[in-house]
Length: 485
Image 1 (cartoon, helix red, strand yellow):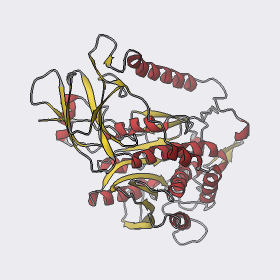
Image 2 (image 1 turned 180 degrees about the vertical axis):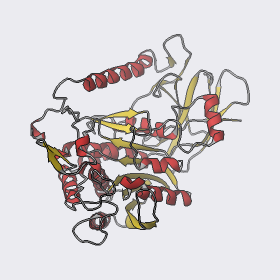
Image 3 (image 1 turned 90 degrees about the horizontal axis):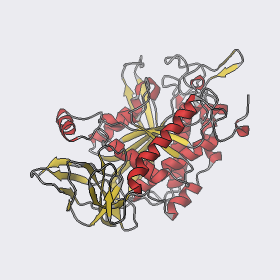
Image 4 (image 1 turned 90 degrees about the vertical axis):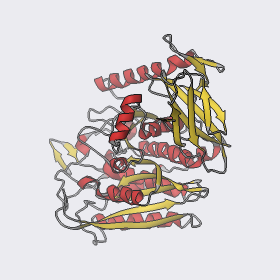
């Protein structure tokens, strides 16, 4: 077997997958660059004879000094140690032993809990850690009443503690038979890698002061049916919690595909269009005005690209316009079901010989989700993407609320209204807009510290959004307006 250290960063041989990825990048770049090339700071004129309007080309949000320092503290050695330690528990199957001190999900749970408590001890009381448990009665893939326990570390925000951002990895594992709770199931990539990301972020953020609340969770029961994350999301919903963003890191441990090609600089982010929790009334509104590409989860994904696709993370975020992969699902779905914006991070190309497989050798080929098939340098970059997204969200103002596009009159301009945020460092707002056929926001118009504005551009021809800005220049995700009066 070729060692990971001897492989190049790029694909080792040309494949159809490589060609399609390159073609996708080229097409996407052309789509975004075309309108920007024809705009000026004073007036933005789109291509193809479309409407002209005010604004300037939109630019990514560069990481500030504190974020760059935070990203440098992510430690590849610690991430590798977490993945290897979790694999050493043999199996972390949800139905495995909960009281064996060395093997099974209970031993893994207790180890994660103690590690997070150690991080919290350095937080001056800002971070708390809890075991969030409940008894799952018999259900699909749960044959007997079973205790499901999430390990939750909460870093309370100081100025906007009610605003919450969540990151999860699932610490349960499985082998070929999803009901086999005794065979080895090391679960290195799926999903010790995601747990390692969440734990490393908890470690480096515990000593920092955040404006909003960030929650780092190792959830259980994912392989049996998203049980742990489902309970977590329902608890937030029952408490009417303002969860403004959630990320599931699931299978983020390998940069190598099943054909041997390697992509060490790309991370997929799955983001749904039509919201899972959309009501019939909301569906009617969406159909009448458009918006299939403007769900809160899509705005969250655009934000991640804006703040985390850069040289400081060393990664390209490839947003995929789907809720998840075919025949698969992760813990972000539990939050989508409760109406929260959420997305799923996962590696660019998968090797299914090292997921959901018994540990064995067949015809000289090693199967099983073992640590030797992980790329720990890659996981570290995944952690940087997560850190850039979460820290930027938590330090910026919240997503604007009550954003309305006034449709009570027939006019050729656009009036927008919203509710002012409560952040003490809020500086004002920006209106963004794009052609209805453009995948990304392309133009931005600063409008100041106001709650209503009129733009000399027809609402019938383009899409609009509103985002908040603080005194340090941090920007919120975009809020897509609903029609109203």
